[in-house]
Amino acid sequence: MAKKTRTLRCRIGYATLLAGMTMGLIPFAIAQSSEESVVTGEEFIQEIEASINNISTEVLVKMAGENPGLELVDVRTEREIALTGGMIKAGRRTHHINRGWLEFQVTDRIPDLETPIVVYCGTNRRSPLAAATLQRMGYKNVFNYPDGFPAWPEAGHPVQPSDEYVGSMLYRMPIQVVDGVWSAIGATAPATYENSGHNNNLSFIIGKEAVMVVNASDNYLLAKSLHDEIKKHTSLPVRYVVLENGQGHAMLGMNYWQQQGAEIIAHVDTFDVIEERGNTTLERMQFRNRDKAMGTEISTPDISFETIHLVDLGDMQVEVLYLGPSHSPGDTQVWLPEHKLMIAGDLAFHERLLPVFDDSDTAGWLETWKEFENLKPEVVIPGHGHPTTIDVVTEWTIGYLEYMRSEIAAILDDGGSLIDAYKIDQSAFSHLDTYDELAGLNADRIYRAMEFE
Image (cartoon, rainbow, N blue to C red):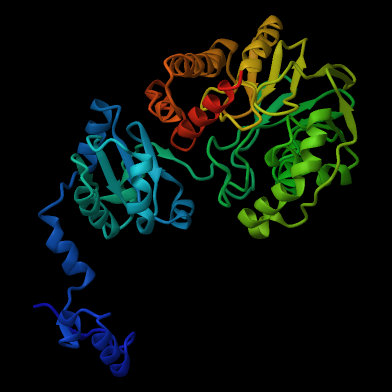
């Protein structure tokens, strides 16, 4: 039996109710009685159970294996995801959309109403409601996973972690790439409080006499966390820190390293970016990172260069290079000729979709890539994602740029508009992280730039 409760009693007093009825602001049907039947959350879930499709863990495993286009939606809060270790890794992609924002965000994330979708939470309270909502919004293939997140790792299935290095602000602990070269691989996702802004690669090179760090990091405390890891491998001082560009996750930790006696090396264009946007970038990081932003202050690099800056670490010659325009002003590479290893920074992408900014130069990027290839690197540490080879980053960086520029050139030749650019089929790249966040923006920015080339 549904419970009886007094409605409106806390929100609308008698005088207000009467006035609202008189003015026609409150529907007569509501005002007619101050008592009506309501259902509890449990009863509401029971009512909608018959209208949704529930699946078991075994069925979800089978669906993910048979349908690579399967999309999962985790409707828990960010805090829950962080505390429980991440999200389910299955199908094409797992989206985090807090239950309260589902109706407003899902159509941007998953525009195709025919896409098979599995929703889940942690206790099967929010996910049935989410499944019913998606069906009402017109999605045709919606499934609820009542076992929820806890059952998935318990059954031995893979998880997409929110933080792989618990106890450190680093998202991952550093891995050795080649002798003397290490990299802490960041999350291939936007910066969040949970990943402490470690969403790019923070690398370091240990020479005979000194250490070089590539990227000062997103904040003071994250830089200190990286330094703590470096100290586990060497007692040598960090004397040089190279900024791959002027973005926050590359430069905001500068003041920590300068306090340790390191010199900051940056391209002349990076100096300009920091001067123009540094304070705004800091404020955004402070808003996102809150207490984790403690100690971070805007600083200025110590050494500028235009095309090449040489550094001797004692037994290793390091070349800090500017190969040409690409992803953002002053994009810098670090080349180790003896190892045939390139710390490419944001010149190269492969695990996440590359971002195109208003000041990106996609035409110049293609030309700069030729200089990159001429060095014949055997190992590439990209700005985001794990170390790989030049063939892999060529496929997902140049392959993407050439495809998008070709499609947009055809639109412009046919007299098309920006609306047509948004309709470009980018599905061949949809498996890359940040695809949902960046695909539409990239089409917009490349189109606007090519209009005036």
